[in-house]
Length: 424
Image (cartoon, rainbow, N blue to C red; front, side, top):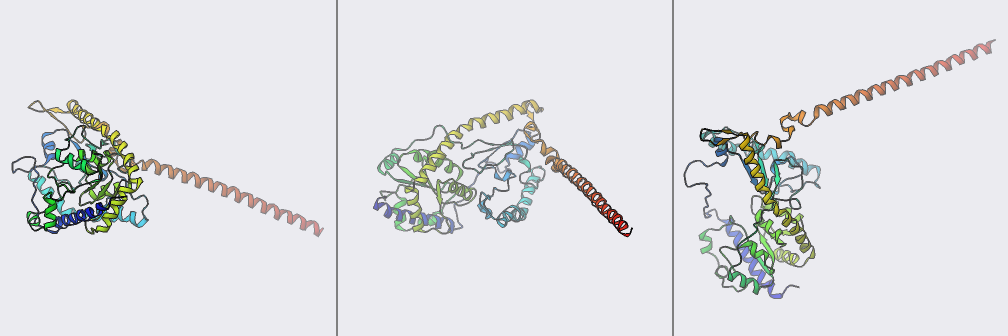
């Protein structure tokens, strides 16, 4: 059973969560963030460096489902489940045909703008979002057991979860707080769920008290060593936005999650976590105190969440060793470039990324759709089968016809003889 005072604490806590989310997404005047590769104002494009400089390219992503040809994998942001295995015909048709068409139409204008930027820096236009990465080594910071299994190209390698072998420890304040609270809920929504200074200034005195760490059972920190907190024995639950890193660290530490997905890959991760039996999710569009309290109780008390967390922890720890495999794969690409590249005037190597990893590219991609799928061979086999079946059927029909005709003529002849005998 949970302590009685925990529920009064949860009421204050979920009021804070509701305030945080409503204020975060209720105002258009958000704190601006800027991400850049350099301080210059020149166009920034990682791929441009590869195209111009002829350097080998290796891609990395949290999941590669967009690159797979598995129609049973989808995304909740398109109104589909991550796993279409048990969906109706209409659901599968909508997610495999209708939604991709809508997505393609919606992305036409952004793609035009992107191609204009490409042209401004001398890069050829490209109308396929995935075309430039189709023949590159793509590393996925993911693992089966969490991700839905599928047949992948040799160029697509799961190397996750990438978890550091060493990580920052707890500060004395956090260590003291966790030791004093044997059933702690850790709450973090990543870096992009932000609120404006105006919203903070207009917050209620109750929320201000919490933000100023004046409430003894809630601690607010500007920076938290997340892996250290999740590894602490007193951290029983993780309320998270469901980002890939947070999801992996939660599984690595066997910490059940209450997920509040916001955007990007988070809705998909939330559904995967629920399917794995380690989490429950809540909607930022419909935050209800009773719903949050009910799900917290389930996550803390139901044994299935603990068992699934331990099962996934084993998988996460085993698969986390594959980050060294990722380093080896990058070394392979660089070594291949050394032998297949062409030296430029500066002594460096220029490579053609389309053909750099030719030995890894499955031959069907170079054979064309019909030959690559062996449709010509299978089609010929079907035609031969139909011809043989037709010939066999025709021969059987002719034999049957001759037999029936012979029997009929024989009966007619016998009747004629009998009639002649009677006349005599």
